[in-house]
Image (tube, rainbow, N blue to C red; front, side, top):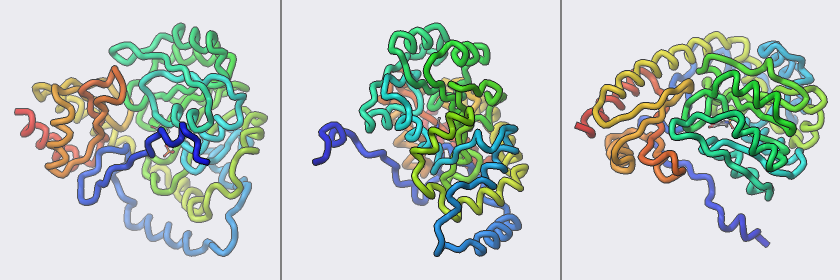
Length: 344
Ligand SMILES: Cc1ncc(COP(=O)(O)O)c(C=O)c1O
């Protein structure tokens, strides 16, 4: 009945955050401006939910294609980029999936669900990775697919551009460059798209986490093949209408991302000044820090009403590490005040 390896897995755990300052899941802290919210609700009121949603979503894909500078045939939409990771792992030949370690957990988790072998390329202590090393593992394992989060989660660093380029050109299986945190970093990799290189994106981190919408950009023929394992009507009608509307106002979300980038720099400097905190460089909307006792700091922050992510114990390289999402100015200041109190 239920597979033994599924029984052995733990379900994806989302902690209760009610009433807390929520800095654990890389969400955008800003709610929608009032004027925009009203216009958006008018758009939603037009949706006929007695009908199935638009199955092909050509107009929406056209809009996203324009936004990204590609053709609509190069765009595939998913119920969050998580769903696209699943589609890629379903559709590709079930050989080894290569990932850096540590990285985003879903690459490994979905591979396990699908009984796909995973090879992890451990990062250096400073979370860098040599492209030769990654390519060697891909060649040795005859990798069918590899994922490279740029910037990486949970470390926050962005691999050097020439290294990503060398991996993109040197790999013989598929390379998925995951730009979930691209809006907070200095570059995009759309220019590397080829018959075996795809770029994965999401609207979750720029302010629409509740909508669940991600997309992958790739070679049109590859996208057509991946589309065959997409669940019919995977993007619900309200999300489609919301995305079509919000894309016309994307400048608002870009301005918010810029504010988050500024706050990240303020937080990185302020945290580095607190005795007992080591801050790692980040190009994402979160900071990874190391303290003397991550469990104790995590619990004390929780007592103070602030939820962050405790990474201690999740990977050899993440000992005593905490991941802090960049929130609003007030939320960040509250976190700084609490940390100063806890650590001094
Ligand atoms: C690197 C990376 N990729 C993809 C995702 C999934 O994003 P979503 O499914 O919300 O689009 C996340 C979420 O944390 C992530 O960190």
